[in-house]
Length: 250
Image (cartoon, rainbow, N blue to C red; front, side, top):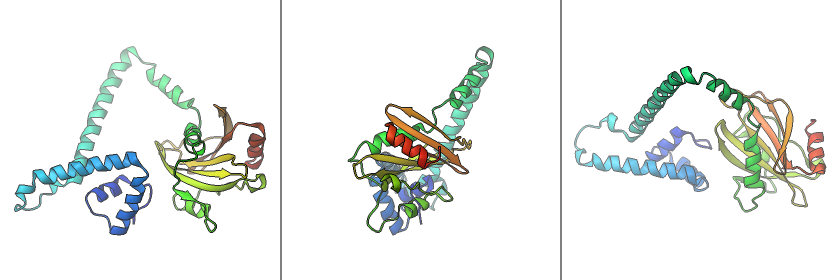
């Protein structure tokens, strides 16, 4: 059984018709709401059809595993990575003489990157746009925590903002450079919105101290636990900001 968001292996199995029918239907529904991934899968399907057509007149010969479309795609990807690695080594060799400080500058820029900028961008895209579809909506018998636990094990519990009148109403799965992420949207009776954002810290395990920052009318309160980074994002108005700080013990 596949999990969502799908792995690259699941997508290749989908292209090569190796998924069970229930998994294929589930992935069809997921691709319908993720057009960028669907476009990549469509391109792979076209490549597979062209490869099969090119060798179709040799069907009487024994199966050649070297012609398997999935293996061909993997070989091309590995070749591309080797070329990129070679180019990177050449660039480093050239840079040592005249640009010895460049790598140090890059490291400083990475260390000063704004924390949880992706959480604030997700709020702008989905919380401020009320017509965007959600991957999960709370119904009368819905359980947002159970939905979140399907994708993020051993994560912090969803913050309880009910004393301030905010309840979780919907959620979206997202893809980031650090890995799969999710944004849970809270609303109050006046329609004001707050988001809870969770994602892994990335391959370098970049965990965050408790902190906050504001930008473009939004306020983010962020923190980390082993395995995940978190943020609560809201409009930067004084009552909401103070409520979040008190609720999250900042």
